[in-house]
Image 1 (tube, rainbow, N blue to C red):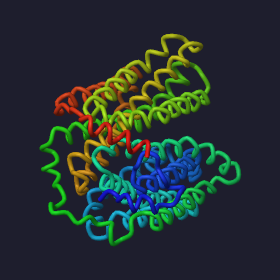
Image 2: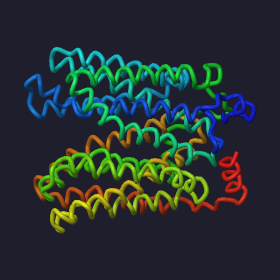
Image 3: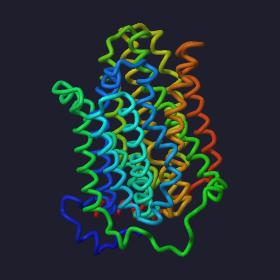
Length: 421
């Protein structure tokens, strides 16, 4: 349950939050940063290392997909584990599993060993992801869920921006060095989790009601809207955007691949810059309007991305960068509002609905690149981007079915008081 004022007063100074959020939210954000840095470190080298075993491009892709696939397959088994051990233990053990599998992958002497270790890492990642989200939603009050989600997402974003740069440095030392850096960052994050998060006797919440079932959650239009939005976000942001924007930059705009990194970095900065105000808006303006806005911004931006190629390589790259920044602003709302909605639906009780919500993003990230690649081969880049844009717009339209929210003056004043505390 949310931390008491006395507990807040005892927290270390470096963990004090001016917005009144519980200590666990700050700790989870630090952990998210460590995880994202480590994951980003792997980006420059993983495909190259897989390719060093003289395998096909398809087999290289299997190494990338194995991690996400195992996350998807094992996520449903995490809530029962949390019920037995608690979020803190499951989160820490999951991170240690990913750390150990990463170090073992760096020592792999065959392609199949590398593939196996990446798959095992996906199991640990599922444990971390579901446990972290369960803990995040359980420890905050309803009026704090938007800001808590924003802070947690900010940790991932900042780590994701720093990771590839750090990985490039270590890759110049050794092709396998980033694997061990990833393992080290995860070990550090796991230690932080076990040392700083809520102690075992307080981790498993004692509630009068049982954990919400998936069928019960699915009967709520708010939960269905959150899942559809998360699937569309996984499809476009984690799948199509990462796989097709680099192709658009090189083949459509005739610019060097370095421009992809520049555009993505600027978009990430834009997304990070608006996370705090977006999180506050989710708590004060409401979940429904922010989800609708997020779907409209990202959907329209996705439709406009291939259009930038018609402007020529001089203007087109800058227009594409602006469009990606707009997409980043919408993604900031996508990373906060649906999570807050799931917390509202489940009343912070965790269980299968949280695991399923997480799986929707993984499912989109797995299907999206494959489907978009096939569409691009058959019809071109425009239709491939259009499918993702249509899914995002569908999420916005479906979110209109959510009940209207009327934030009270008391809740708005409470948010302002917490931020000024």
